[in-house]
Length: 603
Image (cartoon, rainbow, N blue to C red; front, side, top):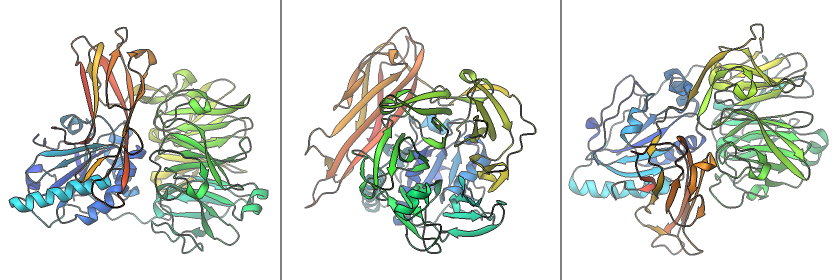
């Protein structure tokens, strides 16, 4: 397939220059379809960096930013995300998802490789494709050097000089018993400690550059730290550290001794979780983008929001263990027993007297967990699904949020929500079930902290802390909005469904320990699937779509294991992707649905 032209409204990281595919003939082009609020998209950004360095003279990476949420389509929001996450390649704003549709993309993230002659030769959905891409690119280099169609040298990337500020994209904050304010200074890769005025910088933990190093406060390194929580004093005395840091991009938890300033790794291997067990000795367990942390007496440990796989874990600092607490790794919104509930990129936690409050960014939801009998039960106060959002106050079942990242319990027992993409602080009253807006016109608020005298807002995109000013609190009655991604139109009845996976050059399917592939399919609402739901080891299946439904979402999880073909000790890897495919049923719709996990779309 000839690669379609790139269409959008603005180019970033090019000095204002518009790029056309024709001028890239002779180069290998890697298109990264992403959106800034998607955690898996952020993982792919990190995975691509070594490839961009390794193949700098032949590879042109272009980010195609196709937004899920309304706010993500604003050029200013993309500019902030590009700086915050260290994106060092050209980025196209595709707010109307024109390029997304031309390339038949079905999921965030999706990677498309275009060869030097302008043809699409490889597509991969999800994360974990770095090794496969290296093989594909290496093979393309050999082929096109031989044909004389490869061009080396040159770069389209034009960096933007960031503004100098004391904080850079801070995310969360906590207050010590002495009144000092600790802030996760995310893009400065450090923890900033302020005096009780929240303005006077006292010291920093971390040298200020991205890395993964333990040691004294001035040499330790973090990578995009986010969540913070203080341990009870008696626990801190036992384990030798007071502050637990969600070191998000390192996929670790770090402990900070506030007396000496020493930083130690307390959980995580530094590898992102892909599949398998996520419980065990803390330093042996793969974590995945821990986004927030909170000590909760009800579980006797630190609850960890594992944004990367839509679960919650508990870290026991005394036993030095991590265990799954809630969630199944399926992204969605489902209440009930904690182990069977669905979450969607949980990004903020707060403890009340009798429950744990949380916000799920991708379902724009406020939820809570409380003890129930011998276990825990999950409930939802605000939010409905992966595709509905907005800024609307009123009774909770009708209220709408947009990608909230922070939550705090106020002194009166009500809940404050950092409604990030609406630029607002919202309030939910559990006694009345009412949602109101406390403050608006904020720059991506992502955290809240209650002090003895005020509530501080972590205003991420303004690079500051500011007191909450609720003088203009009131009701907002905005429109209900929905994800812009167009639905796939399918015919009711039998559907021929398949997921394409082809191992990259030099690899084969790994069936040494059983089937190499796995496919799980459910639907929202569940009644949408009259047949074919469940889990199997084949990547093809016949589904039956119930005729009585007009629309819904197919939630699909596919994974495949592959290994090197020729190696004494072959490297093996698991490729996995979750799709939430919105569908509309129409008698004239398609009777076939094909998704690409990895491979050449033309085969």
